[in-house]
Amino acid sequence: MNKEYYGLVSGLHQLVAGKTPELSLLAFRDELSNQLEPADYYQVLLLFYPYDHQNLLQDLFKENPEPHSLGNLSEKERSDLLAKKLTDDLYFQSFLDKYDRLLEEPQENALEQALWEHYFSFCLEHGNEFLQQWIRLESTLRNLTALHLARKLSISVEDQLLTTGLFTPEETLRLNPSDLDKTHPWIKAYMEALNLDKPKERKKQLDQIRWDYLDESTFFHYFGVEKVLAYVIKLSDLETNWDAEAGKQAFESFNESIRRDLEKRLL
Image (cartoon, rainbow, N blue to C red; front, side, top):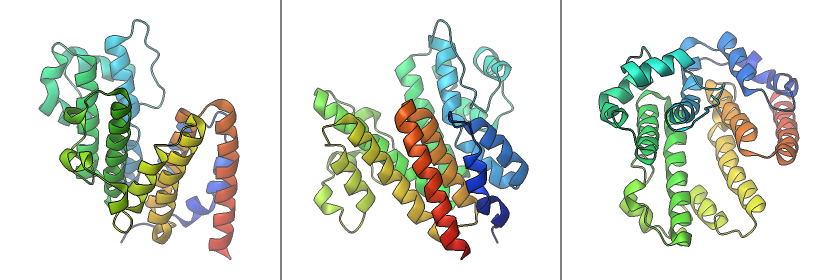
């Protein structure tokens, strides 16, 4: 039976409300390390490996890299990984087992693509059921976003589409929103939102679709780790993908939604 975190989830409103305007996701993650079971906390850590991707790419290709504090690896661990191909981290050891040749003479685009392919595959293998479902959706949305941009720029990205989505790359190329009404409404809504003209409106709509999916997929796991993971994903979006003013407004709305949701649940 999965552990229920009644106290943690019930206190999320106060916990989130106490954060700085910059949304200290790092402090939130540290707090979770004290409150979650180790196996559940590992699910949280899986969400942070993309920050390690960013750090590794900066270490290799940027003249004056500024490491992201949200990565799971320390600077020394990254150095050992790149220079010696040594790591105690299961995620990156698995990456080395499959892609160590890419670190011999690294090319930025190829390495970044391999990191993302590995990330989604690893999460499908080591993530819980909620995270597996989320990863399949995220892979699909990333493919659709890349394909939409490529078509606008008249370039080809077929060989760069991820293989971990709900559809194969070949199926993704043939997707028609009108065919997805009943089977994949989230995908249909996302494809339609990609066509919005105003960037801010488009960004807001795309994130809202992902957040609505998170809310629905955690409805029956309200006090489980699934709800905590959904909060981490949302806070990550707010901290890293929004400008200051829009992020502040979205955060206030997010915090208010937590409060209302908890009130309904605890009545």
